[in-house]
Image (tube, rainbow, N blue to C red; front, side, top):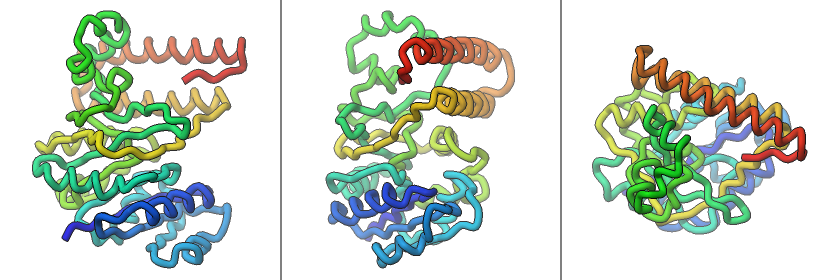
Length: 295
């Protein structure tokens, strides 16, 4: 019988994490599951408070905040399910997304990773199914008017991200890690038989999907379930830009892994850093003029 080990990382977000756990318990009906909560050395409150409210969960208390990937690896060590779901603490289930998404993955023998549709609390779509960046992708994104000469299905399949309405099942290069479901047995093929934890935070999902695809497995977005992902952006422009800088750094590291350090990488880096640097500059100017942080 299939069983899902739901792993949630908590770091100083007791109420948010408790709401997430509560939603999993309230809506998951169609499959056996366990909830493994990893507390990454929180100082907000005693993590044992989770056990008082949710006595059926498994609590793992880390002595250090090792980051997202390392925390999930601690949870995986305790997992008894044949499927692993990495679930962000700022997500809320409003339907049995775990059961339906697992059923989809179970029926696709060559698919190793899947995720579902995510929306903000106000219902706006989040762009969670992505293509790996490339020179072609960057240029098409820069001169995006060209893309609108293509019919929507072709444009969506080519670009994904903001060009995809997330309205159909779609093979992707990588998926957002906020709801990241995979077969546990693929870990036996991963470096050190665990999730690669070289990044403290941001970019791990991208890296893991690349590694899994290199093994010959597929990554597929499933449109048949929806969750709410709060994902509240910071209103501090300096913090937001530092975050974007970290993400750019990891993007370039992954490109080195994928393509090496040759001419392709050099050209990509020039285009990518110029484009993203310009966007960050514009964000800062808009913030100074309007006090608004744009996405």
